[in-house]
Structure formats: C-alpha cells, structure tokens
Length: 340
Length: 184
Image 1 (spheres, helix red, strand yellow):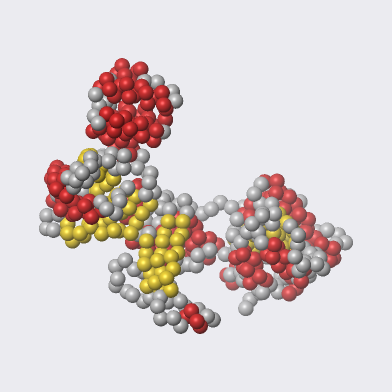
Image 2 (image 1 turned 90 degrees about the vertical axis):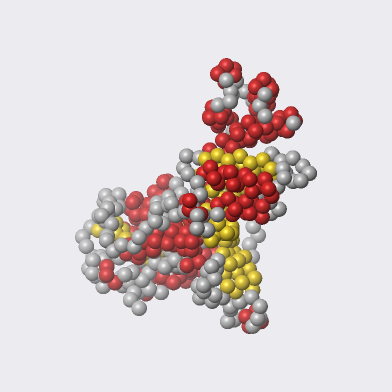
C-alpha cells in the first residue's frame, strides 16, 4: 500500500513542471500552513520528492488523496496525450433531466457492477464539465493508478471526451456511460486531438463562425497611394470563402485530418489500374501544428482552390477529423462525397 | 485573350511604373513598401498574383515600364504560375521591359533542375535574372536598389540608355554545359 502511494507521488512530482507545482499544491490545499512554508519549491525535484514524502507520511495521505492532486493538475492542464471525442445517441425520454448527483451515483454503481476492482473519482468543474478519473483493475488485481483514464462529459449534451482508454476497457466505459446518462449507445465521433479545449470547441461549435454577407468591410487598409493591388477583388473573394468554410478569428487547434479512401482508381492514362473492380485503398493524412489555420490560409492565398471543397470544409462544419470517402454514396452518416 | 501592351499608353512626367507578379504575394509587399520610398522619381507599384490582369483596371492603369516576375525556388507552383502568366504579356515587353527575380535559390532543398529551368526560360526570353534574399531588410533594400536601377532605364530617365540596350548587357545566359550533370 505504501509503495504504490510513493510511486504515484513520485510520478506526479516528476510530471508536474516546477513552475506549476506551487499553484497545484495550493489548489489541493492538503498541506498545513507550516508545511507549505517549510517546503522550498526551488529545490531540485528529487529533494522535493523526499520532503513531500516525509510530509505525506506525517499527514498519512492515502492513495485517494494523491489521486486528488493528480486530478487537479490534469484538469488545469488537459492538453496532454490524445483526446478522443464520443457521442451519445438515441436518448431516452428522461435523458435531458439527468443531473449531477444522479449521474455520479449511477455511473459509479454501473461501473462497479461491470468491473470488480475499479477506482472512480468524479469532480464537477466550473464550466459545466464533469471530470471522471478511472483507475482500472480486474477480478484479480487492484486498480492500476499509474494508467488512469480521464473522461470529460458535459451534462445536458451528448458529448464525451476520453483520454488514455485501452480497447479492453472501452466497452465497459461505454456501457456505464450509456446506463448512467439514459441514452442507448455511445459512438465514436471521429474527432481526436491533443488539446481538449480545441476538440471541445470544434465539436460543440464554440468558436467564431462567419455568415455570408454582401456588405463591404467598413475598415479599409491604409496603403500608400502609389501602391495598387491589381487583383484585390479576387483576393477578397478567396478570403471570404475561406472564412466561410473554416471560421473567422482564432480557430480550434487540431493536429491531423485523416481521410480513408475507398474509391476506385481514376486515371484515364493508366488503364490497368483504372480497370480494376475493387476500390483503391489509400489513406491521406494532413498534419500540422494548427491544421484549421493552415487550411484556411491555403484557401485564402490560392493554394487550395476556392470554393473550398466539402472534403476540407467538413472538418469544421461537421466537427470531425476522420473521414471514410467512398464513391457516390450520399446519405451515409460518416462519409463525405469526393470532389470529381 | 487580353494581354498587357507596353506602348499603348502615354508616359507620365517624372514617374515610373512597375508591376510585380508573384504567386505567393509575400515578397512583393516588402519590395513595394521599399520602392515607393524612392524620392527622385515617383514610383507607382502595381501588385498582382498572376497574369492576365483584371479588365476593370484597364482604364486607370498607367503605362507599365517594367514587369518583374518573382519566382520562389522552393515552390514548383510558383514557377508554373510564372510560365502561365508569360503567355499574357505582349511580345513587345520582352525588349528589355521584363525581368525575373528569384528568391530562396541558395536553399539546399531546391532541386537543381528548377533553377536550370528558370535560367533557360530567362535566357530564351533575353531577360535579366536577378537573385534576391527576401528574409532580411538588407536583402529587400538590395533587391529594391537593383530593380530601381533597371526601372529608371526602362522608364527613360537615364539619358543615352534604353531598355533594349540595357537588356543586351544584363540578359541571362546559360552556360553550354547546363545539361551536363554537376558534381556537387
């Protein structure tokens, strides 16, 4: 019991950067005033660890206390690891009446029914998000606190964001969520990224969108009278179409867009490949530090032809970054029509 | 297909008009800001992404004395756009009123064939080929000075020198062994 507490504390101290350690410990509030005074945060980490371990033994902190600290750190710095978005479907009649305490109790109850040894911690954050930390065990072993799964759910919305979930535990989490939120299924929303805030904004449409307008912009650029742009009209058009497709202002930062092509090979000069019946399987991946920003720039500078192809604009319109593209298949929910 | 004509309008007093054509529309902005600072002559700078130019500006556009094609060696698209734009220029321009300016030619990731193709293009059209460095202010100033030197001649401000005469001296030539593999 002691060893695991020490290991977890060690991991945490190593993981949290020195400049954030003070704020995180203060928020946690488990250190007494003298202990806080005595703790010198400018020391190297291994010394700090020794001091914290001494305080831990003095205060008799359990594993539960340390996981609180971890949760506080993760909630304030969620942009680590990969987050995956999921959507709950087919609500029951009382799905919109589910409130916090009911959700908490039901979730813990159902998860414990499914997995004998599991450690669940639920916390409500200020912005309507419910954070859940799950340490998984199984019928024979204790929960593993070194690889917890974090789940963020916005009550009253069907969206769930998950990080560090293995495929073994996915059906269990899915079942517990579905039963506690009164929906019927949980499906993959095909959206992933490193920044939780970005994928949340993209999926829940919380970024600035632009509506097409014919009014000219009131602010004109001040340029030297001898300087004239010949094709300013074209440039303005491209910019307008780019902002219509992707949005104006700061865009949510996603890193990749993956298109899985299952279309037939089309090249009039290559008969052998084009005459094949089966689709030409190919995966196209776009990656960037800030993908939406780069795509918008490509469209407004003329690199990508405008009007922006629906394949690209669906990323922000549908809030997804994984697409399966097939030939002429309208009406399928997770597919986009290829541009001919 | 409308093309830009060199001598269809009358020149204005003490002014020179330059057209900068660049696919990326980056370097032309810094060049333009530096060019308009020139005090001896009134320099009018027109910026375009590619040719042909829109018909709406036909009336208000002054007589263009020099057309500069800015090619970014890092991008194949830039070169292809330049080649496509050349078709929309009246042949009269190629008697000394066209100039090629190349950026990022020193970059190691540029394939040598691209620079060779630009060289051959400039040589076949009898135009000068300038190399410019666009990232630093010193590079921009340098490029501006060189363009102004050519612009003043093509606008007729330098006595005893004409555009055709200057281009004969400054035009790009290709070495006879350009198609041989190089050893670097």
